[in-house]
Length: 289
Image (cartoon, rainbow, N blue to C red; front, side, top):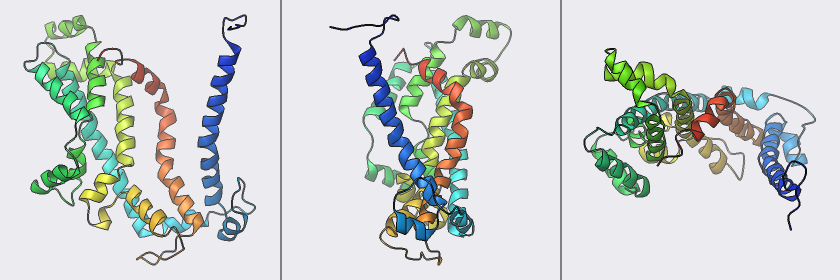
């Protein structure tokens, strides 16, 4: 039999929820604090103490060491370029197509919606995708990354539903005042859709920043690799020892931890500024399918 408090809530249910939240928080926080602390520790302390949250001797040698590694800084620049232009292409194409599909007067709308839904359920596969990119001559080009993931079907469907919630009377009033379709989209629809635009911009930015599989598949030149691929080389290929890479750099445990922190830092800095849009953007437009 359920017992409720004066506020009409079940204390046992609330306790379980808070317990799960605390466990989830610890699962995220403990590894992050350990990696952060290890990145500021000396190599001798990491090897001697093993697991700790606070280094006895703080040092930034690992971060300074990474900044002198041209391979690391180049991969960081590559990741910034891929994230900026990839996200710009993603959000532009997604918002334009979603706006078009949100209009009931668009001819062939049902067929296009079916094609979008079909690609969300069934993918082409790795080998057909690679052959298409190769025939287009996009191997070793960032366009292989941009075009291959230009529009995410799920994001497109949610954004289309968001646009459908905008009152049609508002758009009709703008047309009566002489507003063209493109100007209506730019001056009326986009400002009203900022929560959805910012939310999916964040989704696309995270995806592009963490791009890994397609970069390995389509980019053969290590000079073009983004940060995640370079991080993989650093963490996996030198996991069992402190061997030097081809450039003569020694990846100590502290350097590896510092690389992980630098990789995660940009998104950690950006997310708090977008959080107010994130919650609203995820809720609006999620009712209709």
